[in-house]
Image (cartoon, rainbow, N blue to C red; front, side, top):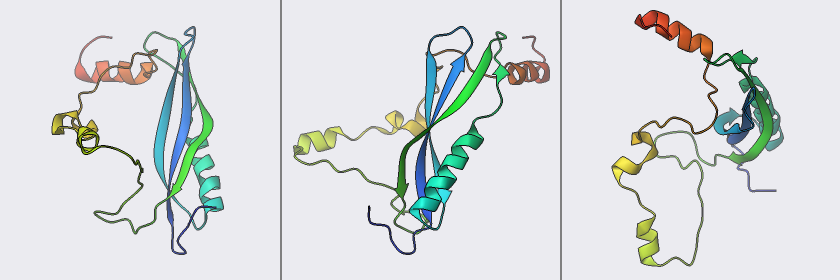
Amino acid sequence: MAYIPNDAEWYLADLIVEIRVEDDPRSVVHINTVLVKACSPDDAYEKALQLGEQQVGESYLNPAGKKVEMRFVGLKDLSVIYEKLEHGAELFFAETSGMSPEDVVAMTRSKEALSVFAEIEPSAGPDYSSGKIADDFGKESGSSA
């Protein structure tokens, strides 16, 4: 078993959720990373599974009237957070060895290329947006759907 500090109380769980739209053979898969508070790895595992099941709501219709269904598939990963949650706490790490100095520098990104600053791009997959929300937004903004 991995090293788990005695005072560990937080974990990160990667939840796999599959989204399917009626009459579309493609699926959309989300890997949702969530924070789990637990007293042990086994407790974290059970709580992560519960969170996954909770993320899957009832089916709904998209703006085209197609049924959208979500399914919790399982966990991709479950990691302990070794440090107390506060500014600067390390949440997880990845290790790579044998890289040249140029390769290390090439891993960096400009500010504009960081995810937090990226433009939102429409999904290339099927439209799994909620028809009700789109309709409600249209009514509130005064536009017709």
